[in-house]
Amino acid sequence: MTSSWSSCRPTYGSWLNWIESEFAALRYFALNGTDHRSHGEQNAAIAAYIRWRNARAQPKTNFAPDSPIRTWTQYPAKAA
Image (cartoon, rainbow, N blue to C red; front, side, top):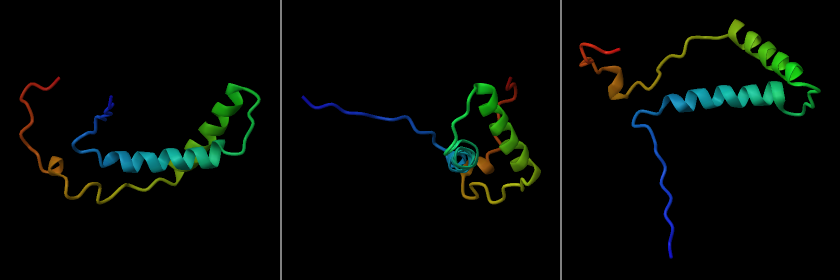
């Protein structure tokens, strides 16, 4: 008996590459090598990193430049 495994992947998922690097940095700078005594202490470390990161954030440029979704203009008239 063979088993097969499939995964669902978004058609235009290049944004996942951007967000994964942000989570990796959060994990590295705020969580690795720590032993927080409470969830509140851990939340404070995460919040401190996010404040630091947001203060130095730069706009992302050339975000999926070849993706057809960048040029798609046929949006539904009544999108809610």
